[in-house]
Amino acid sequence: MAQHHSSRALTYGGGGSGAVNFSDGWGIAAGTGVDIPQGNFNYTFKPANSFNASVYRFLGPFTANLSVGYMNFKPDEYLISEEVEGTGSTANTYYADMPVIAAYGGAAYNIDIADNFRVYGGVNLGVYFTDFAVGYEIDGVDPFVYDKWSQSLYYAPKVGVIFPITPKLGVSIESKYNFFSQKLTLGDVSAKQNWNSLSLGAELVFKF
Image 1 (cartoon, rainbow, N blue to C red):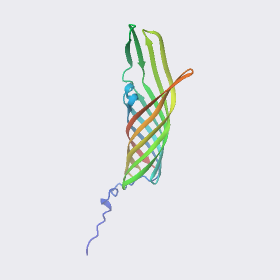
Image 2: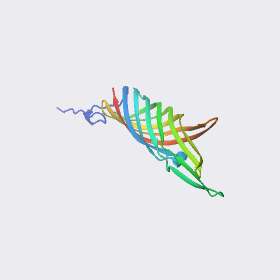
Image 3: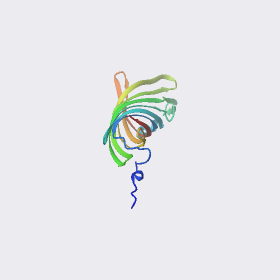
Image 4: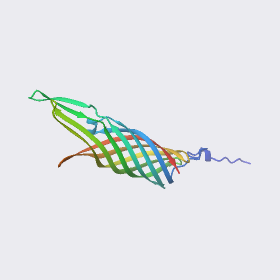
């Protein structure tokens, strides 16, 4: 009599771990990555390490998240000195670290590539709280200092992959392109600088 052999263990999610794509229930996650300034933002600040925590809701092919994050951008140079043409004076511009606290929600659509591997694309929308500081003086006379927390709209398209290691533990690797506006207000005068950055990061996702 011919023997029948099951191929279940040979499928891409049918190993001994029993891991399958997260398509229902809830999850919590903690992650880290790097945030790389782009464009004008890159002229002033260096890449920064990022840290984040999230709550996920898995709804079939859709995933929703609520997240908080933290970064601290360091300036390329803390002091820039320039001679004022035709005066013999020296103008000094001072920069400081810029911490960022992010609070946002997001949504993504997932495509299952295999039993325990899915790719996704989506968008985040929320608020950046930033502490931007700059100082300016010429020959040490009448120094001007701006140092203030402000908030701005933040949004980011994102793409990534997520795969479970066990039925309750998974790994997510994500890239997103961040857009936000740094608002500067001094008395009745205000200005806005549009900045953007590229984020690359990974999370551990705990499903329950």
